Length: 122
Image (cartoon, rainbow, N blue to C red; front, side, top):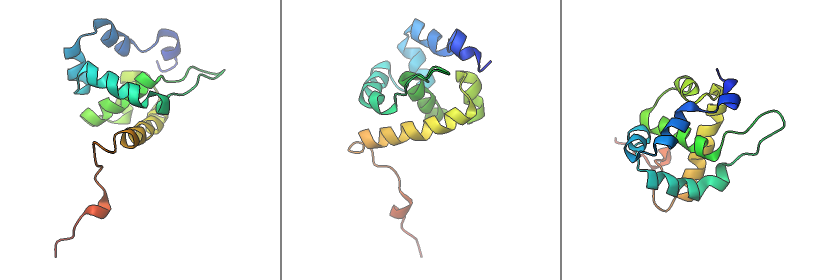
């Protein structure tokens, strides 16, 4: 199934894109299509990978969708691998990379929670 991703593509993402229904995107990613496209435009160059001779890279769009789905639902990487036809080990690399790009790009808008900022209560 995972190997067919290169042949068949990601059917789920194709269906969402084909519908182009904002309501579907909102339910799936918990954000509007405009917000998604804005975020993608801002971080695309930071998360984009090049195709190799051996296989096609996971696109920036797919990388962002995988990460947003993980953040929105808390689904396991194992569950996401079947949903997106991307291996568990690849998802383990994608999520932190995309999160780092999001934090870097939107640091002025969102302050990440840091353990060092926790005040101990006596």
